[in-house]
Every structure is written in structure tokens, then in C-alpha cells.
Amino acid sequence: MQIYLPIAEVAVNAYLLLGLGGMVGVLSGMFGVGGGFLMTPLLFFIGIPPAVAVATGTNQIVASSFSGVLAHLKRKTVDLRMGTVLLSGGLVGAALGVQFFAYLRSIGQVDLLVTLSYVVFLGIIGGLMLVESLRALLRTRGGRVVPKRKKHGWVHALPVKMKFRTSGLY
Image (tube, rainbow, N blue to C red; front, side, top):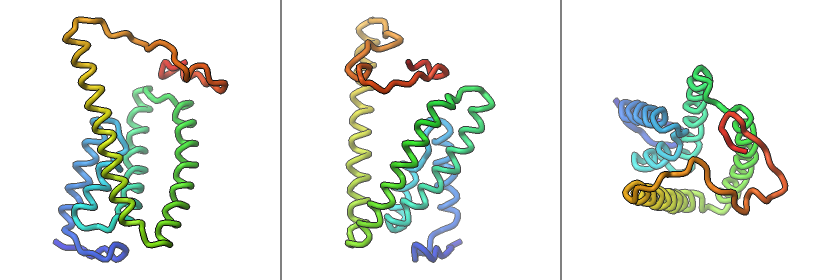
């Protein structure tokens, strides 16, 4: 069953969209992520223009994050103070991103930059996860006990600090 998406100016299979949404929702719930980094590239692959995919992925992030917060609030596993700080930074970052996005659209380079940025960003994240996994594997094979907390580094010498007691970060 094809549906026409007038903003994207493409027709896609409605069942495919439902399946993608369901799959990303399950993965988001399992791994505690917003899902946008999964949804946006998947929308690229089914033919949705990058600018529309980014905006659609953002809507999906809001919905899945909200439902995730509600579920974790019931379990009392949400650090509301940390969430407020992250939300504040996210709002500022999103506002700047929208302005940058509008600039790219005005010069006609939004699709290219969004696509390339996703490839680079996901590649970097994947590489960092690989390095961390290899380090964890080497630590467990070496028989060393993994310390619960890392030693304080240069970040702890910075002047502005907050304590997040629920998360155990101070």
C-alpha cells in the first residue's frame, strides 16, 4: 500500500514505514537511545530527501524519548537534574542547528552536507565503540578488576561543576 508524502514529494510503502518505526522503537527501548540516528539514515535509504529525513527523525526522537522518560520515571532511574541540563544544551544546539540548516538550504548544499555528515558521524561513533569494546575485552582477559570510577582528570579542574547524585556523578 503506497502513500504519497507531499512534503518529501515521494510515494512509499506504508507498511515499510510502520515496520521501520516499530524496529527503531524496539531498538530505542532496548538501548536507551532516541532513535533518530537510526531512523534518519533508514529514511535516506528508502528515498526520503535528507532535509525531510532529518526533520522527520527529530519528531521520532521526541516521541520515543518522551515515552522512554515516562517508563524510566516509573522505575525511578531518571536523574532529573542531569536531564534538565542536557535538555537546556539540546535546545540551544537545536536552535543553532536549525539556523545552520537554513543557511545550507539557502546555498543549496543541505542534502550533500547532511548525507556526508551522517556517514562521518556514524563512522566516528562506530570507531569509538569498537575501541571501547576492544579495551573492555582486553581488561577482562587480563584478569584485572575494572575500577568503578575513573581517576579525576583535567575536566574536574574546570571551574563550573554540578553534582548529579542520582547518576552518581560528582
